[in-house]
Image (tube, rainbow, N blue to C red; front, side):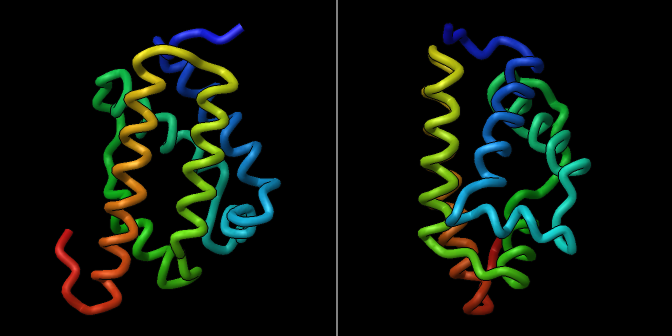
Length: 131
């Protein structure tokens, strides 16, 4: 039965279920299997903090996701297809496990992130990146 996102435990369920799907995905899984650039032990808690900050108004995330993704892009080029698949998997995970206003808020945030990340990545390639 689906429930509303109301706690950090719910966020943890979302993040873990999402990345379980991501690891096996044919389009974006390779990015997360490159252990030279990625650590599950570090990434999962950071993502729980990130989404708890966005959806539960916790102030637990301290970082700059834009710079992280630009750095990743320099090592493993990220394209529209990667962000589109990330968004699809995230939406599917939300819809599988949860319902309610925070699901809709998460989807809005993901859509905005996709647009902004792609724009900033493009700008970083042209040498006029503004954070």
